[in-house]
Amino acid sequence: MNARFKIPPFPAVILAIISVQGGAAFAKSLFPVLGAAGTSTIRIGISALILFAFNRPNLKELSPSQWKAIIPYGLCLGAMNGIFYLSLSRIPLGLAVALEFIGPLMLSVLTSKSRMDYLWALLAVAGIALITPWNGKGIDLYGAGMALLAGGFWAGYIVLGQRTSAVIDGAKAVTVGMIFAILIILPFGIADGKLGNFTVAMIPSAIALGLLCSAIPFSLEIDALKHIPAKTFSILMSLDPAFGALCGLIFLKEFLSLSEWMAIGLVIIASLGATLTGRPEKQMIQ
Image 1: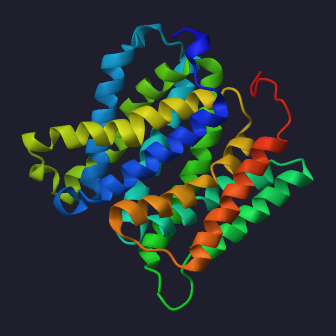
Image 2 (image 1 turned 60 degrees about the horizontal axis):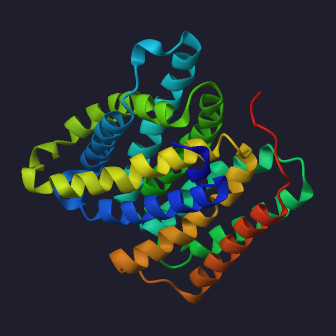
């Protein structure tokens, strides 16, 4: 594709967030039939097929250094998605995304060299604290633990995606990475025992799920990671809890309190601040 038609990195990340959270709400509606692991398996599998059909990568052309970057990237991608869906089966979407976000948030703080970055990170932390129903509602510890673990893989996905995008075209990296993502999630989908519930009538839903949750956002993110640093990407991703809560409200009827709406405002301010005050960046990886 001609460079003039490429989406700039910041809008690309926002579009990826909207796509992922809308798709996550849709995916949760499939859990009663396919289960969390089965839905994740279908999502990754359909995404891989779509990406391979569209990008048609030549695996024989990949160098050893490219394979070395793609394999851990793909494994991390699969683990992140599978574990997040396990958390989503036990806790609300907004809470799951808020807890998962702790991973990339910690990455942004640990790699920061600017005091302004800490300010935006603190605002995002305040937003997460407000959007998390700590008092009176109780938290499923397994679901919360899976969300936190998914956040750790999310941080790894950012770092590995940055490195991978430096040695191979982003679209090709995502496409080939999906091979290893499906390898890590497929055994759990089979063990869950609900993949057999998938029918021909569900194919359109599966295609929509693959596009919204994987093919579109991962392609946008891998390209964006080539042009913005990991810490800026991580802070910008603080929009995820806000969009997760909004999609939970719209599609799953998970209603928000006043404090949770305040949290949305805080994470939006943090993300806009990171975008507006970020310095022009050189290529992330030399």
